[in-house]
Amino acid sequence: MADTYDTLLIERHADGYAVVTLNRPEALNALNSALFTDLAAFLDAVEHDDTVRCLILTGSGDKAFAAGADIKEMADQTYAEMYRGNFFAHGHDRIVRFRKPIIAAVNGFALGGGCELAMLCDFIVASDKAKFGQPEINLGVAPGIGGSQRLTRLVGKSKAMDMVLTARMMDAAEAERAGLASRVFPHDQLLDETRKIAARIAAQSPLAVMANKEMVNAALETTLTQGVQFERRLFHSLFAFEDQKEGMTAFIEKRKPDFRGR
Ligand code: HXC
Image (cartoon, rainbow, N blue to C red; front, side, top):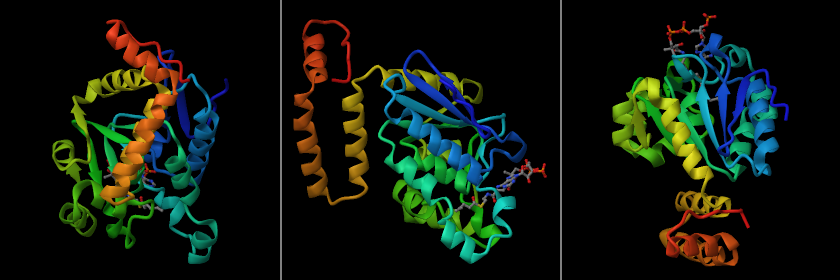
C-alpha cells in the first residue's frame, strides 16, 4: 500500500501497529494545513484496515514532537479566512472520530497545537527530554485545537491556567506527575518502548480495544451515572463477540488467546 505523504512518514509494522512521524523537521514539525490534510487522509486509509490496530504518533528529528501550529502560515490570516475555513476543525474532528488507539510518543517540544495534538491522542508517553506548553499567549492568541479544554481536564484548572497565562513549559517529570503523560522513558528508548506498548494493544481483541477506548472517552463527556450505564451496556455487548469466548477460554485452558476481531 502506498503511504506517501509530503508531511508524514508512515511505517507499518507486522505486529499490527503503524508509526506515523510528523515530518517537517526544518520547522520543528510545526502543524500546517497540509499536515492535517495528510493525517486525516491516513486515518481514513487505516480506519477499516485490520492490519493496523494501533497507531504511534511521534515527531521527526531529535528536538520536537511539534512546536505548534505553523506560525508562518497563520500570521497573515484574516478573521474571515479563519472562520470560513474553520481552521484545523477538520483535522481535529477526524482524530476525535478515529476508533483505534493513538499513542503520542512525545520526543521533545510539544507546544501549542503540538501539545493539543498530543492530547488528542489516547494517551501520551514522553521522552525525559519532552517539554509541554501552551505558549500561544506569547503570540497574542490562545489555544485553538482543544487545548484549553483538554489540558484543564487532564491536569486540573490550576496548572492549566498557570500554563496558558504564563506560557511556561512543563518538563516530562511534571507532566507525568500531573497526569498529562502516562509514562516517561529515557529519550533514546522512547520509540522502542512505545512500540512494545503498541504491539501489546494490537495483540488484543480489536473489538475490546475499541470498546475500552469508547468507555474511557465517555468519562469526559457524561455524568458518572450515565457513564457507568454506558459502560455496563457496552460490557454486556462484548459477550456477543467470539473474542470474548476466545479470551476467557484461553485463560481457562492456560494458553494465549487468538483474537480475530469477530
Ligand atoms: C512555524 C516554527 C515554529 C512554529 C519553530 N519554527 N516553531 N515555524 N511555526 N510554531 C521554526 C523556526 O522559525 C525556525 O525556522 C525553526 O523552526 C527552528 O526553530 P528555532 O526557534 O530556531 O529553534 P530553537 O531556538 O531551538 O527554539 C525552539 C522553540 C521555538 C522554543 C520550540 O522554536 C519556539 O518557541 N517555537 C514556537 C512555539 C510556539 O509559540 N508554539 C505555538 C504556536 S501557536 P528557521 O526558518 O528560522 O530556521 C499554536 C496555535 C494552535 O500552536 C491553535 C491553532 C488553531
